[in-house]
Length: 545
Image (cartoon, rainbow, N blue to C red):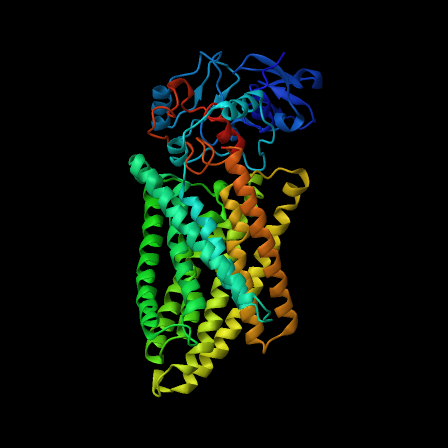
């Protein structure tokens, strides 16, 4: 009988106890001796002493490619492994170390922020221990306070998506009865959701003060801290869209929104730079683990352009011009940072294939930078001729006209890039949906929020092309899909809370990953489990870490 725990290990090509290499004549060699095929089809796992059958693909792997984070998944039977201290000493000397098996020599590497399966070899099967852990979690009862501990920053993606959906609904060029009311419903509901999020995460930090610092240094949760800032910016955009100008409010609200716009600009640049600095100084990432989520800290800057475009058309010209100039500058920072991360993402796709199924919803984040930049640049360019002074840049109105044309062409150029990433992201989910491999996570709101930028950009391109009807219709189709998708994701979120898939230990972005461990003694791993990626909770194994 063989230990089921080894099944994901072997099928992930992480461990092979005998070193095989191909012979030019087509046979296999073991320690220089040619073996018949029947001898190398089976071997023994040195970690659980069980007899298993290796596939031909496994046999073609050498042990130099086995691990990213050193030995893991060690069972209690493997008593001959060296201690962590000995392994660290070997690392400093750059030596190989052995488990006691003369055929097994593995180069030890220090853990990264999260464990990484071999490229192109996702662990697709779950062991019996995984199933037992999930069954046990359903039998455990946690108090409200204990569940609030796991209210992570990722919840603010919900308010990002809801607020931007309210903006998109009002942007639809084909006006219909009740359009403003429907948008207002999403706007008001978003205010309720933001109040809920702020209350819950404040309770988390009040009841568990250590989690505040931990959330800023966690390799995954820290990426979503800017979501709270984006949610604040989204509310400002909603207020501008639904309440400012056109006789809807007084002068006081216009001035207030101008001040809040500059306050938000300061928060955006602070959080974007701050989170990236924390990432670069506390975490070590590899290209094999790259996802578009790395773009997320730049998102606070990416909605400044659309916000500036909306606000500049509703305030006095003397206030509109600085807003447009500042919007162009900060939008450029956000997009250029995202563009450089785009390069790393494409390199990761070329060398490591698509991300794991559980991470693929995050691919839609790559749509947002281009989409929001299109909407911002075109809208600001269209508003610029009406607010520039006579001698602006030495040419006056000519500068506004030239800027308008350049903004339109730049938006059309970026629209193609956004469509490209949208198609790639949709295609990457085909195998997941077909085989039912997607499990809910709050990152599912990536289906909504980035694509609101693409939809707003589509309507902006239609305006730039003199109200092009086919592009307008395409934008309306996107809007309908976004509304339906929002209801679906929101319903799945409520279901996940009930089924304990979120707001639960080791089930969200605050789970233990690689070298990062929670400070909660009830959740801290035992020493025997340290360094064992397959013994650190079913959710971590399920996520493929």
